[in-house]
Image (cartoon, rainbow, N blue to C red; front, top):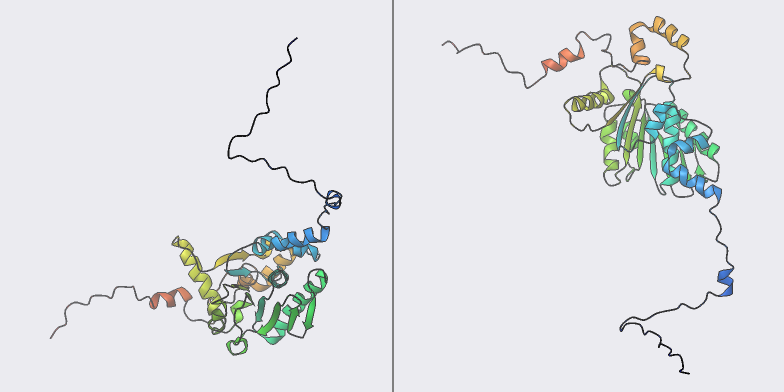
Amino acid sequence: MSALAVAPAASPPLGIWRYTPPPLPREARLRVVRPIEPGVVTDIRCALDPCLLSERAGLVPDPWQRELLRAPDRQILVNCSRQVGKSETTATLASHTAIYTPGAIVLLLSPSLRQSGLLFAKVKRRLKDLGGDFAELETDNALSVRLSNGSEIHSLPGKGETVRGFSGVTLIIVDEAAFIADDLITAVSPMLATSGGRLILLSTPFGKRGVFYEEWAAAERAVAARQTPAYALFTVRAEECPRIPAAFLAEERRKLGVLYQQEYGCQFLDVITALFRHEDVAAALDNDLEAYDFGEEVA
């Protein structure tokens, strides 16, 4: 009886080595991967979406506020009615930038010191509502705060001589921008030169004058010419705010007359005391108009 032939084991091709890793130590095999804590997940979500940070503080944004909070534009103009919630939106923007951009410098500017104080009070209340899990305050003064991550928020009256001295600013918010001095933009724009920071101007219209109107008109002309405007434009009329009753607006329309369209309808009206319309004055200063030919001079 012949013995069964056993085939030799196949050898691996030349140049190929098989590696068998050693077994994991017992403590590594018993290690349990911990899930991410819920607070960390919430923090990441709020960092990615400022609207969620607002909701965390107890304020559900209106549709226009959501659009503004999520807007990535570096320069923004917000032409808005009275009492639509622009200050609350400002508080969220300032808080989100300071919390999630360590070392940020945020400037809140208003035409007067009293207005600056009122705006800043809303920002501090927003930080307080969020609590220490989001923002720990190292210093808390009447017109400035410093967070534990090195970020600072300053509230100043919107005058060129009072805001100079800051550099590398992350965010500048100008409230009631239609009422600021014309030299303010000249003073604050260089602060954004190296930081790539953002500039946001919010206001109810105040006639066809001032830097807020001029920038808005220039942006509208650029859009009409299919060019990229320097500012992204937002318009928020009173009817878009669900908290303002229609009956109240009807009474305001009766009392204010034509001024209703400026206070609540976001229209830039001519100054009532002006002798000529703004468009007529602008046309008179147009350098592109051809001069009338009176013919050859008679000797």
